[in-house]
Amino acid sequence: MFRNLFFQHHLRNRMRDCGGEGGGEHRRGPKFFDSGALRFIVLQLISEQPRHGYDIIKEIEQRIGRGYSPSPGVIYPLLAMLQDEGYVTVAPNGNKNLHTITPEGKAYLEENRSFVDAIMERMSSKSRSAPGDLRDVLFDLRKGLLFNLRGKRLSPEQVAKIREILKRTIDEVNSI
Image 1 (cartoon, rainbow, N blue to C red):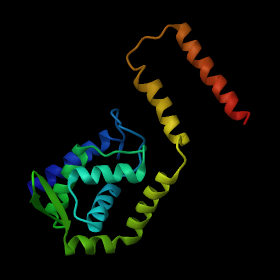
Image 2 (cartoon, rainbow, N blue to C red; image 1 turned 90 degrees about the vertical axis):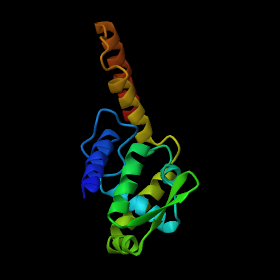
Image 3 (cartoon, rainbow, N blue to C red; image 1 turned 120 degrees about the horizontal axis):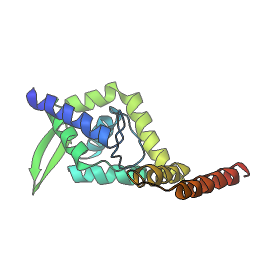
């Protein structure tokens, strides 16, 4: 019980840091999932075939593309929580742990099938989006403006130059 509560608390905090619920200052990429969606994605991937934690991270990254890569600090506590809840079993496999879905995990997925299918479709449509998707560019712009300039004191001339660049960009986009 304590382990489960600890991991739920840790998972919530890590997801907030990575752009999950609540949003944080240390985002790794654009927010793609709400706090509950990732558990279904991980469980669905394990239902397709037994997986190691690293394989789950890489599979999510591949299916979504550049938009999202969950950190080990989110995935491994989530896997422990799924094990505590009886949805997956863990077996040593070399120096890694292999996670396999249980009948309870399959039933849980089936109870939530429409939600799971919608999430998986969203992942699939994200990976089919054109390279250089505007959301990625806007995220990079936001990161450049907010994160890279944080704590720096800009002169009035630098602020005016940034404002001019952004205004010019807005005008060009509006003219398309």
